[in-house]
Length: 64
Image (cartoon, rainbow, N blue to C red):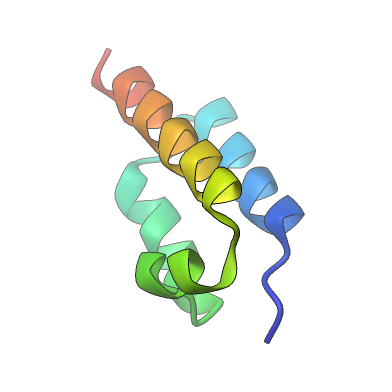
């Protein structure tokens, strides 16, 4: 199964634009049968760092 980085970016964008909780993001990834561990295995390191950075920024947004 090939992971589409655009799909992940859209999920993150949707979560941040609608103020969805991080747990909802994790649930959406789970619905696609993806875990962060699987993402790390399938995506290049640079894309993982972008994803982690986006998740960190999202968590900061949701705390405020």
